Amino acid sequence: MVYADYFEVKARDHWEFRTFKFSEVQKICYYDPNNNWWTPIAMLFSRHYMSFYAQKKYYYLRIYKNTGGYWNYITPEFVSLDLISALRAIEKRSGNITLSLPQ
Image 1 (cartoon, one colour):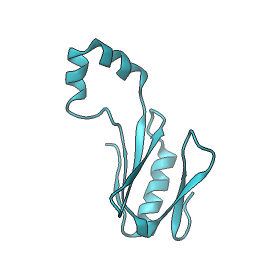
Image 2 (spheres, rainbow, N blue to C red):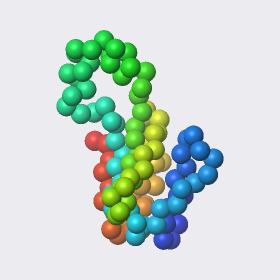
Image 3 (cartoon, rainbow, N blue to C red):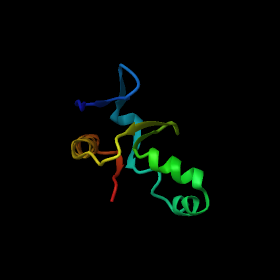
């Protein structure tokens, strides 16, 4: 939910929303945590990792705060166009948040 001065995010495993003021957030990243240089190497050399990777398909929504902390939210394995639209609206309304989206 996006409001005038803040936005809210609800975790899948928690019943209430967490509020983030635009002024408190530095950056938002929406990404695949397994899309990196070492995942193919780990899959090549580790059968255990390959079975784990096949079962754990998801994206992260990571919100970095100005204080140096961050919050991770696990999202479904597909890229949600509704979520991307909401993130772009947050970026536009805030004027100070850097947004990183999947390629």
